[in-house]
Length: 105
Image (cartoon, rainbow, N blue to C red):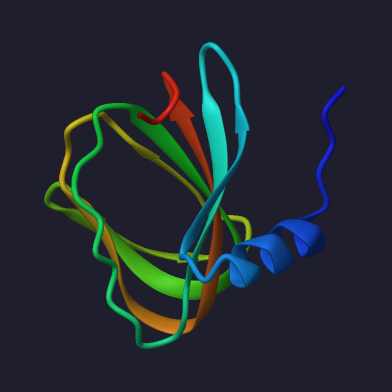
């Protein structure tokens, strides 16, 4: 079994001074924690993998392709591989669990 604590992952991510921390990588998927602070710009580009976002905390909007929706704690968003997407209008520090399938490069 592999088990993780969100507070420990957030501390590790912050210590590494990066917005993204990949903490699990398996044959068919990878999982990471993505962090954007209120007012910050999301620099993402389309990925070569399908991904699922689970919002752990915070508030923002996300645009996937031509569709935009508001997200907050508990929101789940699917993004198909190759589709332009971005979080924006981040009004509360955003912490998002990201699942890539297949694993992120």
